[in-house]
Image (cartoon, rainbow, N blue to C red):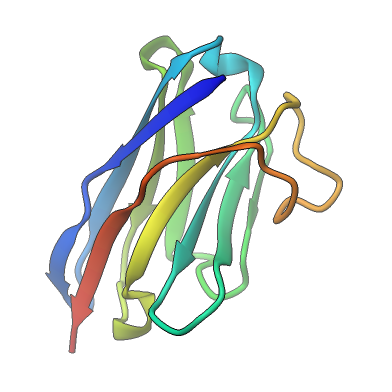
Length: 125
């Protein structure tokens, strides 16, 4: 079992930046590939980015590529999402998730086993 707690969300103007954090506890954090997802009201949950256990392999949704950066610090049991050039359409609840393998899933946007409770990000126009 892995417990995940997100933080760092808030209100920001379009063009601004935020950094989300996801603190992991329980089993060895570095054993798992991790990802960020988001969900807006009335929409399905959307994949944002994923990272393997060492941080050497990453994968992004086209909508955030070149604006968002996923990273991790296994010594601190923490996953990050640096979000730059934010747009109103980035407004959503952001969730971190852990996969039971060290490498990215065959389909990086699917198959995650443990989830955090989410943190709200609101981008004003």
